[in-house]
Amino acid sequence: MIDIREYDGELDEIVFTRDGKCLFHLEQMSDQYWWMAIYDGERTVHIDLMTKRAVIHGSVRKEGIYER
Image (cartoon, rainbow, N blue to C red; front, side, top):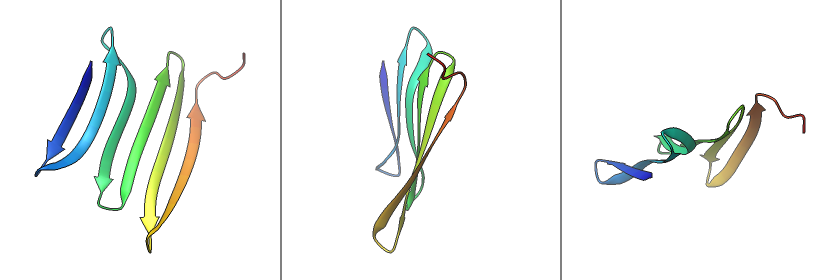
């Protein structure tokens, strides 16, 4: 299921779930900052996207077990 939520007529967040578990979550934290998470069972990747002076800056961090 894909749930698209708005706040004051603007896109606020997108959540994708399967079998009751969240797989993807994108959320607007402010006008210049978006937070994103991708879930894969035991692993999670967080992505932060922000703008400064019209330049987009991003960071990615992973959590959980990544040995494969």
